[in-house]
Image 1 (cartoon, rainbow, N blue to C red):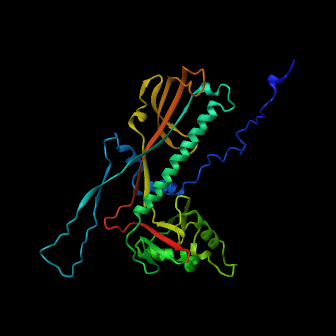
Image 2 (image 1 turned 135 degrees about the vertical axis):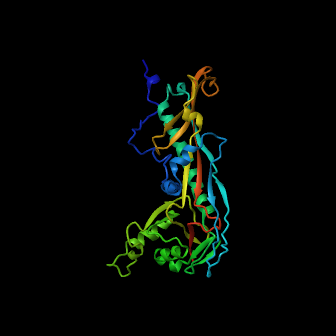
Image 3 (image 1 turned 90 degrees about the horizontal axis):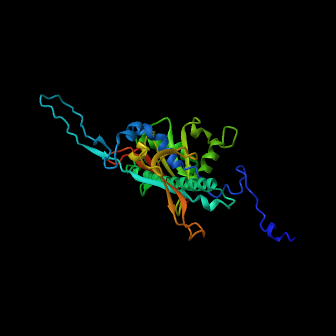
Amino acid sequence: MALTPTVLNDAIALLGESNTFNAYENRLDAYNAYKYHVDNSELLLPKSTIESIKQSERQPEKVPVLNATTNAFISTRSCDIAVPTGTSEFYTLTWVTLGFTAGITKAFHADNYISAEQFIADQIKSGVKSVHEQLETLSVASLEAGKTTNFASSVYANAGGSYTVPQAEKDDFYKNIPAVMKRQILDSPVYDDIANTEALTTATFLQNQGAANSVNSQYQFQTANRFNFYRTNGITAGVGEDEIHYMAAPGAAGVYSWIDIDSRMRNEINSGQFMDVMTDPIMGDQWGVYYKRDCADESARLAGLERTMTEAWEFSKDFAFVTARNSTGDTPIVKFTITTA
C-alpha cells in the first residue's frame, strides 16, 4: 500500500504565543502625542464632566468662556466710575467618530492552521493600531492648530508660526526654553516637550554631559523632571529642519471621548444583534460595540458554504481634541523649529 496520500507535502511550524516570528507584523507605536493629550486632559477641563454631560448625538457640548478684557489702570479718583465691558461666548467641542471592524466565519477555520480566535485577535490589534495612528495624526494637528501666534521673546527669531533655532545654537536650546517661556508669561517648573523622534538624540546627549565632562550641559535640565518628554513619529521634520518641538505649559491641551448611547444602554435588537461596551486588551481603551450574527452565502469564498454563520463586530468611539483657549491667539503652546543650518 502506498503512503502517498498521507505524505507530508508541507512542513508546518506552529507558532507559540511567545514567539516573535510574526509579532512585528502589526507592531504598535508609542503614540506619544496622543498620550500627551490624555495626560493633560484633567488639567484642562474636568474630564469626568465633559465625558458624562453629553447624552445624545444631537446634543452639542459647549463651554462658556470670557473673552480677553482690557481694563486700563487709573491715575486719578473720580465720582464717575468707568466700568470695563466684557464679552463672552460659547466654545463648542468638535467630535469625530473613529473605529474599526472585525469579523469571522468560523467554518473557514475548520481545516485551517489559523484558528478563528487567532484571526479575530489579529483583526482587533490591526484595528486598534489604525485608530491610534489616526489619533496620533489628530493630536499633532491639535498642537499645530493650537500653537501661539504671539512671539514675545527676542532670544530667537520667529517665522511661519514658530521660533527658529539655528543649528549652531542647538546645544543651548534647553537652557533658553525657561527664558523664552517666561517672556511668553508661561513660567512653570515643568514643561511638556512634544517633538519628532529624532529629537531624542539632542536631549539624551545633553543630559549625559555632566560635571565630569569637558563641557557640562546637564545643568540645562536642572532637575530630572524639568521637562516631560513626548517623542512621536507623528511629527516629521521638513526640508531644512532638524527638530520640531511644541513646548507647552501644564494643561495646554487634552482629549475627551464619548461612547454612543445605544452601546452604553447595552441595547439588544435580538439574540444575534446587540450593543455593548468592551475594553480592548491591547491599549485598555473602552469602545462602543455593535455585534451582529447572521446567516450568509459564503460559497464564493469557499465552496459548500452556501449557508453558514458569520459574526461581525463594529468598535467605535467619538473623540474631541481641545487646546487651551485664548481669544487673542496667545496660547500656552509654543512651537520651536531647530534648523539644519
